[in-house]
Image (cartoon, rainbow, N blue to C red; front, top):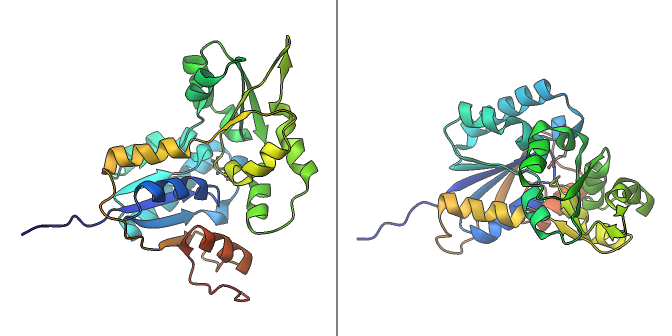
Length: 271
Ligand code: DGL
């Protein structure tokens, strides 16, 4: 007699659609898992929230979602939340959490010019957690912190098919490019999970080529460290949960469908 282990349930959480850039990597390594993509759209963007308010909010929504979906593992696919609230989540809940934090260590190890920039929400770049990563793993690099007010919202608009002007992206991206004593920035850490949604535009609008570092593949590896490798290839469609409870508009439902996520809204439906 042989027993087949039940596929794990993985809950991927973000304030909005940025966590999709992590979700797509985790699905690649655990295609057999049941996925819940949970987004706190009612409270987006997290980057503009005060720390105590955000801690209470994340603990509250996580309590509801963990009770409702009983995940085997939670991926916090949000730098703004992970750099603030991971210790409290781990203290409060039994389930393992995999966080997303700025990839400063690999970026500084990879940089040849020793000029690295970290592009994140204003909240993430000002957190003590981020400063400590630079102190501990900066490896002699000059690290420029660039807090963006609007890039997460621009990424959401682009994903939904709304036009986003080049100028709007350039205004957020330009401070990442530093020239110092004849050297130039060669590595930019994407410290917000929304930004890889705009990767093509970021590359196109860069004044010179740089290595944009996306932590998602490393997060996927951490998931298989904890849960083990895939057990078969069956790919059940993931489900989306919105904290607002609002049905997604057609542009958003179509974007989620491109990631293999079901919203219950038929393509083309006028919601
Ligand atoms: N995706 C989130 C992150 O990685 C932030 C977006 C927001 O401001 O809500 O930081």
